Length: 496
Image 1 (tube, rainbow, N blue to C red):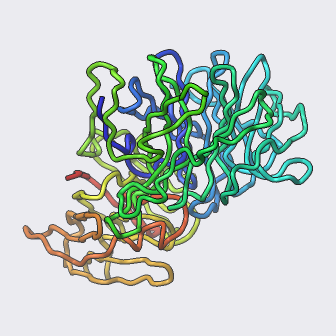
Image 2 (tube, rainbow, N blue to C red):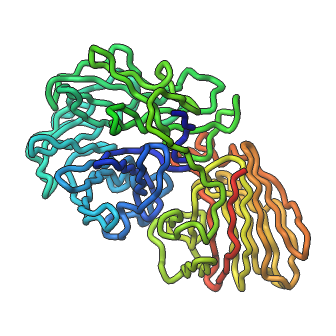
Image 3 (cartoon, helix red, strand yellow):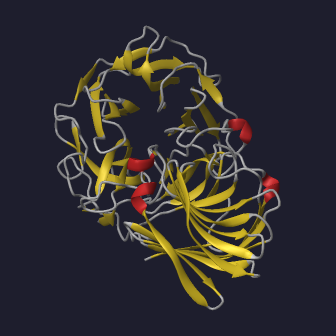
């Protein structure tokens, strides 16, 4: 069986997975975007379909004035006694909590909070007990992977928080997950930071609380020494066993823009790597401990064909699944129809940590052509390639003193510059076009029967290496101005 990585493309970081009967369910981080924590399902671990979000109500998560890369950090999804649980952190409020549902296609509960610090929480169930883990410091101030037993109905601690493993010495010990496999307890985690030094490590013990013995050949998975290789930043994994008894790891990684160009702007994505146990009960992962762009395994699942969607339009996407908002939206400002969107602007710009009129879809690959017909009455409206408040490229129509203009604006840190503008005279509509490649975006308009190139901008200035943070580029539609009203139609994002 051969498949290509990543198995979920674009900004879907920190994957966690569980299996119920013959179906796999996966969740990812969402940070300042709403709805929060996207959920996917799959029958084969390779083809994933988004089915919803865990956090769909403002009462479930506080995102007001949350800066980029704040908000909802790494989730864990688990299933126990007929019920799904998703636990996560709101890093801005420094609260760990979980929600639950008996029907994964329906709404999730209100949050249940756990009085334990750190991030990247995990839930483990055994013999009627629920154990909660995160990184951080325990009740005695000892750092590491911290564990307590909780009352799963209330979130109340039933035992003190205790540090059960200190990792292997790498920085930023995080992403703990506990498993019982063949009678032993395996504690897997990540170190190195979610960047080029990222790695997966693990240890094993005879009880839920250890002591844990580290795998002698840690890290079990990392691409940190594969210089010049497209896939980097491999780490933060979760294990799952398939129907044939094979083990796999779903984990994050990212694709850099060029062989020697160490920048990534698509965000951290979801990768699938085979895992194998030896006769001593230790497991290895990938190809000599690394993740590849494709694996050709001897695991036979029958006729599994990896599907890849190349064209995204209003008509073939779901406003409630594929698209998202910056923080909690003002619903009255959005009229979302099957073939068009009408947005009402406010005084809130894309440059502040609030909720501008914005709805976005993740950029999933390097080479693409993005186009949309845009018309407006007042203010400004267009397409933004959005990384964060200080790093976004905008192609927009703006109402001028006499008539309308189209602008290309680059926002890179403290530099906010309109690089080019073109007069539409009395026309209040145009087709906006962005051509994307690994290293460059090109901005064009189609008006009065011709295409006009406004300018170009390098992708690297929207990368995590420049902007910082943990997100990726979204293709956003936005409107700005208290009297602004814009209509978007014929949206296309075609990957080449």
